[in-house]
Amino acid sequence: MKVCGRAYLQILFLLFPITVPAQWQKKPYSEWSEKEALNVLNNSPWGQTQTVADTSKMFDTRRTLASGESRVAEVPQTNFRIRFFSAKPIRQAISRLVEIKQKGEMNKQLEGQLKALAAADFPDYIVITVLTDFTESGTRMGTAATLLDKLTSAELKNTTYLSIGGQRLFLQEYQPPRKDGLGARFVFPRMVDGKPFISLDSGEVLFHSQLTGANVELNMRFKVKDMVFDGKLEF
Image (tube, rainbow, N blue to C red; front, top):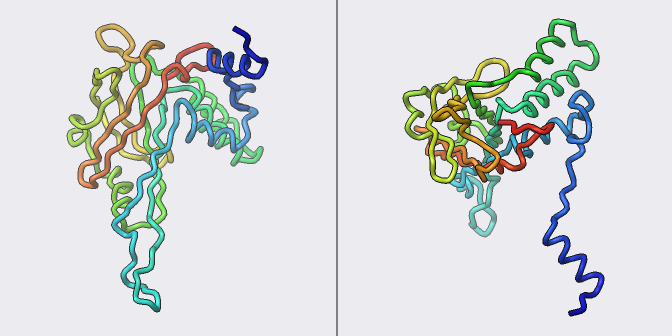
């Protein structure tokens, strides 16, 4: 059977998909631009954004058109930045952003702290951080964001877990946001029955948390095969 050149190329692309590495993957983190560092934090194998809209305020009944019809108002939204803080690329991106904001005026102490943060190992724990930003305070979504300050490990331990193929790893400890701007910390054990909970053949890992009191459910999936960085699985 004859296959024309274009069709043959299409078949090859289906069988062997070409993946082009992101620009930030081609250079050391100390050379990342601000845009590249933010991309690692919010749209990468280790950091994703879940946007939740508060549709309860979709129609603003206080303002009406001349026809008497309700005017559609802007829908308040909250961005939940869900990140594998225990993965080096996330901490490298954080370190790089601080460095960029210092504009070359960083002292030796801070420089050392940032390098230590970027290089640290997490042999015992998986740490997921959740950071929020929202378009309108006082909404249900704004309440969900501020609720992170008040939640406790006891309230979250039965509704927060990592899941792989139906196997659930429940929360070990919850730490509310601090003044460091990193967000709330969800801590899980790294090892289960003497083996890492996440491995290269895990497929996908789901982070799930029900934020009690705000009726908000966080669900974010990460593809494990994409979480390899500098030849090592980072999580």
